[in-house]
Length: 285
Length: 262
Picture 1 (tube, chains in turn brown, orange):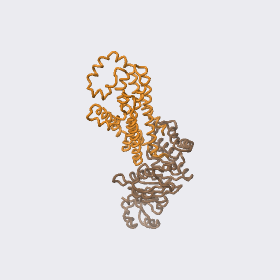
Picture 2 (spheres, helix red, strand yellow):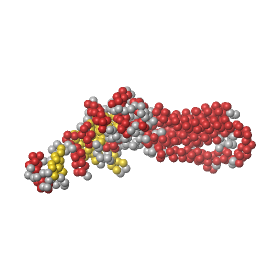
Picture 3 (cartoon, one colour):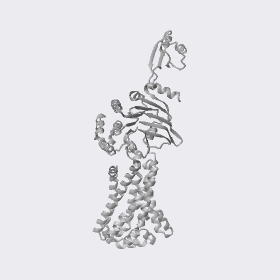
Picture 4 (cartoon, rainbow over the protein chains, first blue to last red):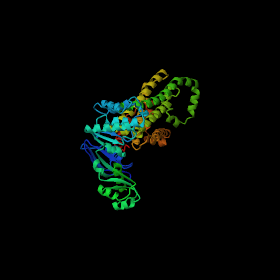
């Protein structure tokens, strides 16, 4: 559905995106993850043609994205990280104005979405809180039933209740065959909603894979409190400092070794997505 | 898009037009009484002006003791400057406002081309300048009809001709705004351009030695003296206007299509 080929973007001498390639399949929720300044928003702005690519090509539904090919935008629903709308309008006027750009009726879905997200239609845009502005942004991004939904940090400003409703909404869109490109740095939501992810750092993709492949099920975190900590670590061939370490060998061997020593406290944890990312980012520093 | 643009720019159009109408209405109402009472002192005052200065303000070919005379001289300055300032300021922010307020992210996510955004804004700007000129023309026709003197052709030409430099100033400022990202960066340029053009034209009229500099002023397009003296308008100016407008529209389109909207 979305294919990026060798995208590079320079801002002066600064390389914001470095030869980035990825493909998002139809019906997939794709997490685009990275710390601030990794190049997530720049990539999205290139997809939306707001900024000029230094090099590279972007295809949506096999069609090359160019400035002249604006009709392709009927297929895209875009939610920017910061929602800026016309402050002189009421929410309903903003929805009607957005509707005026399409050759088909988008109002019914817009009103349904606004109702679902508990958005007051008669409020003026300038009086909306950050969260409500985000809700309106979501309505404007989804009201025309786009095939590709591009979301840049979509949940910032939303309260937990609305966040859950939003995740439900995304799952419903996915069930209807829509493709979602989800840029975020909140890892808990990635695990909750995404099928695949790409890890981005300094404009480069460090890794991209399905969520289940990224989280290594065989690795565990072990925390031990014992007077014999150093001997245990030696026997396990652990070189990490401190009493918490990553263990990726046979668990029975671990238990055998631990049984030989007096242990005051023991905690064994499954590896979380956060740990995977921290591992990747620290490895690539 | 055009409907929204017309709506949001309506308020400033009304304010600028209102300023002109109030000035003109006050003059048309009060001028005959002031002049009748002080006609002698006015003649003495005018005699002080050097001939070239009188010429620069058209006082040598207009009888300033009538309201129509005022309209041809001082009134004309108001028309040139206020149309120009309104058009210039409008041009400097009508397009750039979307980027300044970051609403371009919403607008450009819709199925609309950059050319359509630009052309819609240009249409609205030109419409607003024309609406302003037509309202001022009607007010002047009624005002001067009720006053002492009336010349339909001259009034129509004097109120409509300044639209030409105003539209060029509008387009020039749109083009300049494609190089900027914030409206506060362009407003100063917009105002300066109006006064620069006006003073170049005025100085060229004052001194015959530097008359050639009038070709560097957009206000030369109006040719006020020909309107006043012959009640006619130089058609070649319309031709130059069309060429300049087309060049500026093409340049703005090219630059806007390459611009980074973020």
